[in-house]
Structures are given as structure tokens and as C-alpha cells.
Image (cartoon, rainbow, N blue to C red; front, side):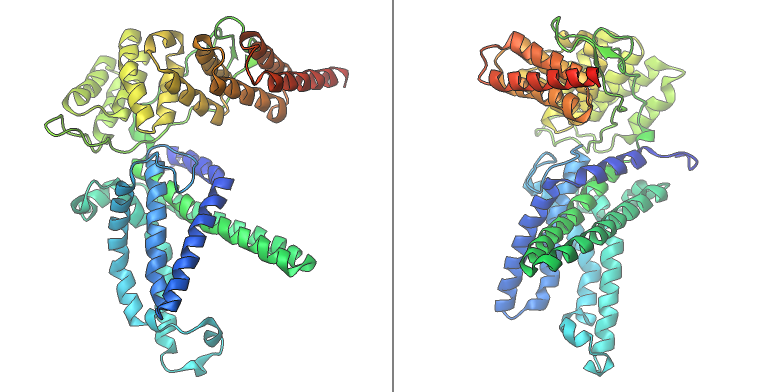
Length: 494
């Protein structure tokens, strides 16, 4: 990693941070906060309120493990109930490893003084509170320090380990963190900075509500606390999940974005899929996302072994490609033959064979890679493959649901022309597919309300009325078309 340049992870941090500020974070915080209140009440009734320290750790460990696994599998948003990163049994495995390491310092701190912590009102009374106050304060200070310092380290190691033995392996920790101090610092900085800024912005809002009515302040304060709580777990989890994959500098460079349909470049103007769609629509200028993905799912008994660490073959292929493209591809082909199919290896094979001009091989690998990536939740990888091989999209044998998933990825990443054209591929087979129609409507709405490009929105609405005039959604499409035409007229007369 070149210390003079930004790493791939620096771009990931920004997008993770942006994606975390959503209603999904609030929903997560509200659900976890409600559960925590219930558990705290039960502990209070049981006469063991200080045991809440462990309850909080367990609850947050499970929630952060959920988000870390989802981040490891390329999910940028979602709630704590999203399962794109794997089953709940996998979540509990990661949380168990994380908790085991956390308990190594939490238990001593608890019995050295945290267990005898007195209520907050007594803490404010000063030294007269009793001779044990010093030990309690020291234990509380240690708790705050360690609960801030250790979670990223433990969670990254836990989510990237295959088992408990690997988690406690020195080689595992060395591989994860050697040469990545700047990336690790970004995790701490983004996490603490986001929480601090959220709190600072929430305080005047709550005070303003208090000036109007204490009931309103209570409501606003509760919402703010729920959001902050959700942000704590989802931001930490996702940052650690994406970090655990590693720096993309070690992976083969992706092939240059291919020309879009009817264009000179992928960032040019995308013509219609099927002849009339989105003619003249300007494609997104957002750079392709280098998605991340964790290890593959375990294979069946007696099958090929699972490749748990893709760094070595990807790095070797990256080094060789410039001087020996065929040799670099051979490295990846060997890994693909020796191990169970892995989304990252197949993705790299698609990219490099396409870049080397071996388009038939690229399409062959894509037919295996696309369903695998989509089934494993590696949606950005699938979208990049599909975009790269757009010219031979008909030979990729994608199912309707897979096309819809890829189109949704394009829509979320603001690659609107590719999103519209991919939804159109579904409409070519079934003109009344409601999900595809709604997808094109969403693209048109983004052109209309976000990009202020009513002419492009008008073309999309017109296309929908042409291909699906009898759809139950036709009335809403017509309303959108009227709005687009009105905005286009206003723009012309302005």
C-alpha cells in the first residue's frame, strides 16, 4: 500500500458513512433500544442491575456481527434483520468470538470495581461517597477506554476468521492489520466523528423542542437516542466488515468500463434496450464500486475445499497481468479448479479475460459467476460483471429475478442508464412485469426530481406507456409523464 495515495478503503468509508444515515438505522436503533429497555427492566426486577453491562455487550455484539457479515458480503444498507451476509448461526459464531475476546478484559474490570458502581447521583456527590469510589471510577475509566479501543480490532478479527483457532492465531491478526494502520485509523475516526456530530446536531433540536413542550422534547430525544444507538452498531459493524475483506489494492485491477449500449464509453449516452428506451439518457458518472465479499460458503462433504483467503491468487494475478495476461488468468483458473467456486475469483476471471480480449471466456465465467454472486449477496460484483459484458448480455442466460437484482444495484448506485436498460430487458420478456415497470418509474423519478432532467424522464415514461399500455400502473406512469412534460416546458421557457 502506498502511503502517499488514498487506499480503496478510504472510498468505502465514505459510502458506508453515507449509507448509514437512513431510516434503516433509526429502525435498527428503535428495535434494539426497545429490547435493551425490556432486558434492563427484567434485570432491575431481578435485583441485578449491574449485570446489564454484560447484557449490553452481548446485544451489541450480536447486532454488530450481523452488520459486519453483511458488510463483508457487500451490503451497503439494510437493517439488523437483513440476512444478506449469512444465517443467524453464522452471526452468533462471529459474536461468540468477539465476546470471548471482550470478556477477557470485561470480567476483570467488572470484578475490580465496575460491579460496585453506584448510581450517577451519588457519583456527583464527590469523594465523600465512600472509600470504594476511587476503585469504581478507575474501573469505569478502564471500561470506557477498552470499550472504545477494542471493538473494531476484535470484530474485524472475528468476522474474518473461519473458526476459533484462526481467531486466536497471531498470523491471522498480522495478516489483517500489517500495513493498514491508516485504514484502521479511518475506522475509529469515521465512527467516533459520526457519533459526535450526530449528538452535537441533536442537542439543539431537542432543546428547541423543549422550549415548545416537554412532551415534544421527550419524543424528539427518544428518536435521536434510537438513531444514535442504531448508528453505533450499524456503522461499526459495516466498517469492520468492509475492512475485513482487505485493501482492494491487492486485487486485480478491474477492466475499464465497457461501452454502454450504443455509446462510445460507459460514461457516455446509453441508447435504448430493445430499440426505443432511454435514447439520449446520460449514464451515471459514478465510478464503479469495488465491492467486497467474504469467504465462500462451505461446500458439500467430499466436494472441493473452500478457498478461505483469496488475497494470494488475486495479488499474484494482479502482478502478472501487465507482462503476462495469460499467465495471470492461469493463476485464477488454477484457483477456480482446485477450490469450490468463489465469487471473487470468478469475478476477477471475468474482468481479466475481458480485458485480455478473451470475450468468449469472459462470458463463460460470467454464466457461473453471476448466479453465484447474486446468491451469496455479492450484488456489486454481479453488477460490475454485467456492466462489463453488456454487449453480450443475451448470452449470459440470466433469470428474470437476477436481472431485477442487478438493475436495483444500478439504481442504488445512480447508474441510471444501466438501471433503465436492465429493467427494460425484463420488460422485453414480460411487458407487464410490475417490478420492472416500477423500477423504470423509479429511474424516471430520479431523473425528474434528483437530476432535474425532465426530458430523460419523459422518454422513460413514454417508453412504459408504449410497451405496457394496459398495466395497472399506467395511470401513475401517465401522471409522471405529465409532470415531466410540465417541467420540461418550464425549463424551456425559463
